[in-house]
Image 1 (cartoon, one colour):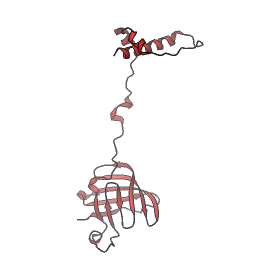
Image 2 (cartoon, one colour):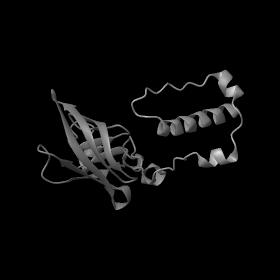
Image 3 (cartoon, rainbow, N blue to C red):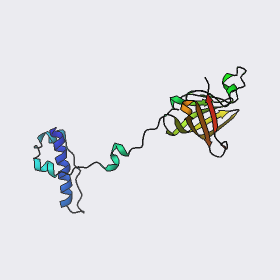
Image 4 (cartoon, rainbow, N blue to C red):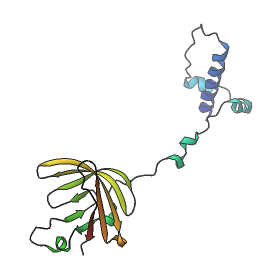
Length: 174
């Protein structure tokens, strides 16, 4: 603890010394060795009170930090979803409107969309950028996913130049 006070006194002394010397004179470098720190007298209360104390800035408070954004698709959205009822029941491999959602991706009939960056999310909503691949192509797309009807309906809205013109509404497969 006395070493900390010695360093504090050295810092205050240097600050005060800097005020009394001419600007033209070279300033010696300040170093505090462990023997100097041990030999330094305990500071008086008035010296401690005189030392400036940095106050925390209002921007440094935890309340000004942006809320944490999840890094996965909300669990309530995980599962199988169909654009039409047959997408959920087909065994012939022709469920072209089937969407399978997991923590980090959406699987479609002939493509996969991997979660790249979550922009905002909640228990029943997410807006994120996905990296798509399928049919020999790769692209990125911003997507909104929103649960409706108590989690029975998933609404997907793509954004950007190649986005579909309107939302797609999926029904949860049973």
